[in-house]
Amino acid sequence: MAKSARRRMGVEERREQLITVALDLFGSRSPEDVSIDEIAERAGISRPLVYHYFPGKQSLYEAALRRAADELSARFVEPREGSLGERLLRVMGRFFDFVEDHGPGFSALMRGGPAAAVGGGDVPHAAGSARATIDDVRQAAYEQILAHLEVERPSARLALIVRSWVSLAETTALLWLDGRTVARAELEVQLVHDFVALAAVGAVADPELADLVRDLLAREPPDGLFADLLTRLVTLVPEAPEAPEAPQAPAASRVSQGPHVSHTSPVSRTPRLPHAPRAPEAPRV
Image (tube, rainbow, N blue to C red; front, side):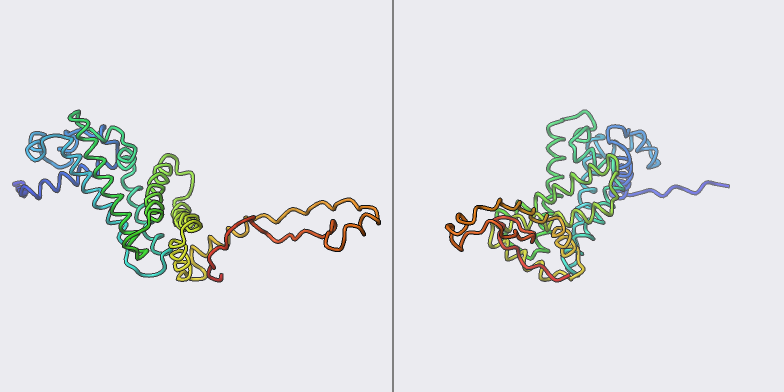
């Protein structure tokens, strides 16, 4: 019986196939451990044919990196449905899906390791290209978060908070990949809590940001993630310690002090943070 003829792919179709194969291999192992021979075998073509479509391993890696960056950026796109806490949690779920699917490649890329130049070529150019691609992902994530906050021109403090949170998500994912000692679902919730915590701390010194935080909290459901965080934080505030009772002064001395001085007044045990500004009113839980 004659073998069925293999379908001939067009140039763009073959390039897309090679990028897909390379992305899968680079995502499962560190890029420097993946060979052109392995890519060719997985794609079902010869090694010289791979070089027909890509000048070398570095150019193929950069194409795969761009594909991965576009996919990762898309993970931050979220419909404006539900509260901000719910939206951020869905974004974190998709973000960790990507991290889990492309662990070694994600780690090598974000840590700036050998993935910066996998083919022994122009290292500065390769490193610069990788950094530019990563920066594009960070910028896309930054713009998406601002869109959910409904802010077009953020203050310097808010811009710093959003960019810091994006970096925190990256670092948390890298640490999680190292040992996965904390459940992924817990980290996703923690990162959502981290966002509102960063915003609340910044709001103490920024009246405009304080108004934004109050508005966000007012929109959150009573059983939402932000309200849950506030409730948990209140339980961490210690009660003021009981002050020791001052020794009794002689009767004559007590009379001379006048009625406005008291050494035996009980100290309130109501939790209090000294000099703390009034916090924005949180939704009732």
